[in-house]
Length: 119
Image (tube, rainbow, N blue to C red; front, top):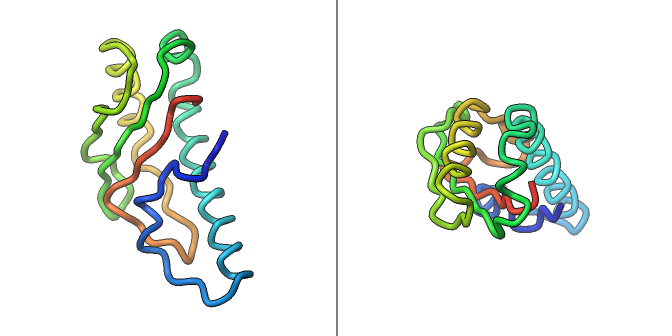
């Protein structure tokens, strides 16, 4: 899975890297964080939305969370799942709450955009 832009908005507040090595480490931490979130969602979703994602196309979920990682709101406006699939996905994201905290060096953001197209 590509993690390049999965949660770009959550990482805008990360501290500025002072060297290429530090920038690489922050990028690695982003991958770790996204892996933790995907792991949490995978445990909750299991096969719940499998039949919706096969031919559903693109699905981005914008998750609004508080400072403890508790999901406050979910926007699936950019998700091509049908209504049933969106309901299942919304329910699964809410059950996965609270989402993991980001690793040291990355700031918690109130908005997190996840590309769930190939989840």
